Image (cartoon, rainbow, N blue to C red; front, side):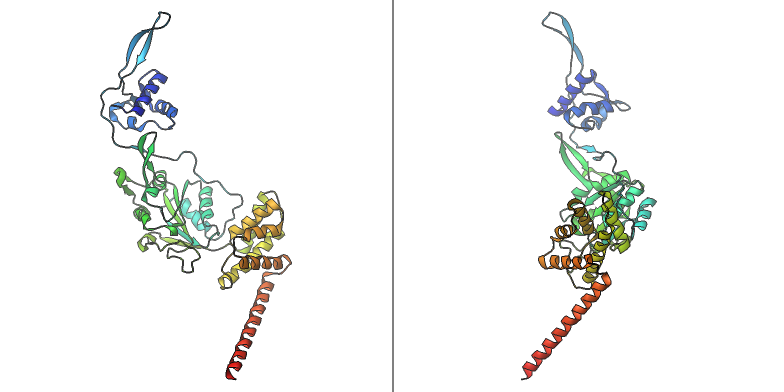
Length: 406
């Protein structure tokens, strides 16, 4: 017997088209009335209802009966009755949950640098060759992959990984849709079946729950236990993972929440790119393009911001400060400047996320750069200050030694 939802569909479809033999497109059209864009899976998956190529017979018994209307006229009425049929208990299988174009758009601000040409070559080849990209936050790892796909007209499915990400999130699971239990593909299966690039963003935040990706990273496909089906990747499918660490955790606590990934999992990535921040000339071009996209121009401000960030990064890598100015943050400052029209305000609001001491030292450093000091001059001033502080510490130590001798 049909359940209530199925009977409602049958009644509506027969009333709409005046027949009980419908094509797939007509079934889809009828099911839109119930808020679903697919043909009813319980019907098209049942071979008993198929009567021809893309043609299905609704489970009805059709007869014409005579009714008398208020005028005493006789009219024919189409009635339907569901026959005794076996209930379809298995869940319908939703082949795809993605529609439309999933090719990224080209970003007019993007500037090629670092490993981008290599990433683009791998994506262009359509070979299955998993890539691991590691580097500090905000240096264009994800954007590089996105733009490589855009330039090569490749579909991209991006998944942001968290510690809660598991097999159900990645491969798919059963979902309730229109009163029916259906199988919903996960992003990994979608990418495999479409021959798309799968981007696993922030992979080092994952737990051992992502070990279901092991066979997929070998390129041999995966057997999905829940639906008893083997999924083989279409030509062009590839996996790219990005991370702030190399999957060994963050010893300095800078990237809290990152985990040590399974060695066998990491070994399935044949290549690892270490992404650095762009060189000053490239970074300056990025900022100029960003400002230009808002209809403004200030090359001098862009150059000073790059100089400022360069000094901070050198100090950071020397252990002088605990924070860093990323390329992303420079872009944020430029965007703030295009909105507020004030340089110092843009710098201040975009450095407020740091603690007071760090923020104040960053702003003080920018005022020096804004006054015309070069990176070399600032570095020399810092060296002299460090030397002076060292001499004061030595003098204090000698004085303490003398007091102790007395």
